Amino acid sequence: MEAYIVDWLNLLARWLHFIAGIAWIGSSFYFIWLDDHLEPPRSADDEQKGVGGEVWSVHGGGFYHAQKYRVAPPELPETLHWFKWEAYTTWLSGMFLLILVYWYGAEIYLIDPAVADLTPAAAVSLAAAFIVGGWFVYDLLCRSRIGNNDALLGGVLLVLVAVLAWGLCQLFGGRGAYIHFGVVLGTIMVANVFFMIIPGQRQMVAAAGRGEAPDPAPGIRAKQRSVHNTYFTLPVLFVMTSNHYAMTYNHEYNWLILIAITVAGALIRSYFVARHKGDASLVPMIIAAALLAGVAVVMLPRPGAVSGESVAFADVRSVVQQRCAGCHSSEPTDPAFPAAPGGVILDTDAQILTEAQRIHQQTVVTRVMPIGNLTGISEEERALLDRWYRDMAGD
Image (cartoon, rainbow, N blue to C red; front, side, top):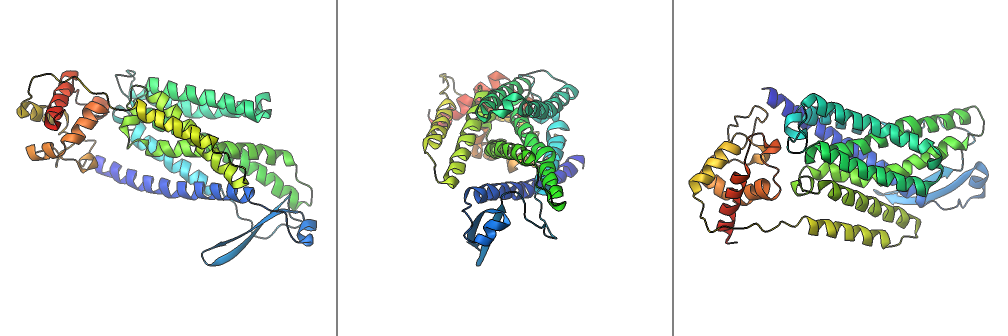
């Protein structure tokens, strides 16, 4: 019953996280597009009112006319819409998922004894330290003299992000390391909204309400953090989906793959930001494509040595029953799984044969199964499954 309840909590929280994330990223991307497409106001009256730019658009059968003031309008409207709860809800639901899946289930999804033999308490403490420490290091860096030079700051952040990816992959299992990398970046993004962007906007609104010229400094700082957020977005989205791709997080060089994909994501985003402004160069996209192609080559499965020994199916069945069927069964015996993960059931010989390719991919190629190696599969057993599959495939 406990595992069933946890599964339902996982489902609902993941659904909420997905919905809120779409709302947050969608509004963020829209406003970046809007800023980059503003044109000088055509009306002299708008110019005198302080309008700095405007854009006309059509959507859903209607015409829209958006205007942006250079500082603030002469008089604030009664209703002023804020965009913050999308970000907060995304982070809160994401943290709930992290605690439920990766901290509550640390022995399954976070700890890998082959990487570092940590206790659940130690692993969770280290994970929390990375999340909190990531924000403080980033914030102090932005407030330092380095923060006054955007190019230098960007270079330093790239190095620190690479160190973060490497460090997490030296402490946790690949899946847990990847998701915590995303959580550190996501926490920085939300903290930027909570501590910098929204307070800066409140100061501007308060000054405008008093009839004073707002101090532009908070807006300048908020803009810098907003730019960082948009470049973090695609790497974070990749991490959100990475648990489906064990070939990345369970690779020998998983940290390097994570860094390469992160850089590629930031480059792709930079291209689209520049494209909005009408001065896009294809160089970032070419570099991103080269990085992704390089990652694909690095991750190519290596052909294994095939011995002349034939493998008896009874031996294969025995390995599957001992190492896999505790979870992948119509009635799993592992209390952590109320139903077979991914709907993969390996109770019968026919089911094992049907799933032969997936068994080989997960246990031999990516080595992600058994998850956390909870059932203690040996290298000899992995080699046996490898020989069996290659004999079947005629390799």
